[in-house]
Length: 247
Image 1: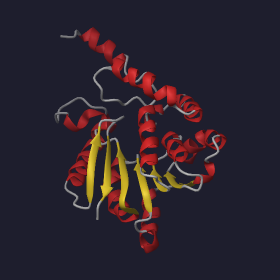
Image 2: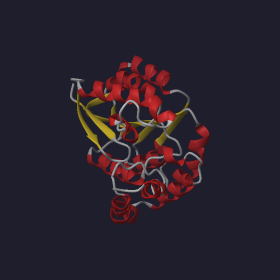
Image 3: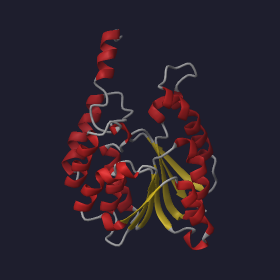
């Protein structure tokens, strides 16, 4: 049984990597994954953007390197061409997507903070993939409502990644299910939410974790019974749920 000192030391050792949200019990095991399969294959541009993001005071918001690698491979596997990203931050997952798409691929990217996006934009431009990105600053819901109104947009997206305000995830889903094609994927990030989804009601949680936990739980319950999709919840990063539209 660990002493209080050992527990404190363990906690102090967590989150040494930028975007480290791994739910693995062993930090050493997570580090092994990074050093064995992620960092040796990480494109130089993604490494540079990860290092730029490390200097941001809210660097924990970034997509982890292992999740970036996963998204990059997933997009290649499904031959995605037309994609969307809600919640961009400095653009690590956006860059992972852009690098995976063909030269004529497109990403509609939305975030309420353009300043964070512009922090990573020079790296994206240097990587030669900025032409694939259409960035819109502001809330995503009005943009989605506009897209849904035009039937030509229905079923037009191969892949959609959501890593934004958790209290709007269900509102996003109601619209995104119309926009993703049958056979296409929607990926919802943070669906295990720091492991808090299984925490008892009186567990000591950070204020923001406690606030958004109920929204994440509500989303997870709704996705589990949605007959329009097949789902797969993966313990990558902070949890990502893939939804494949089937009708």
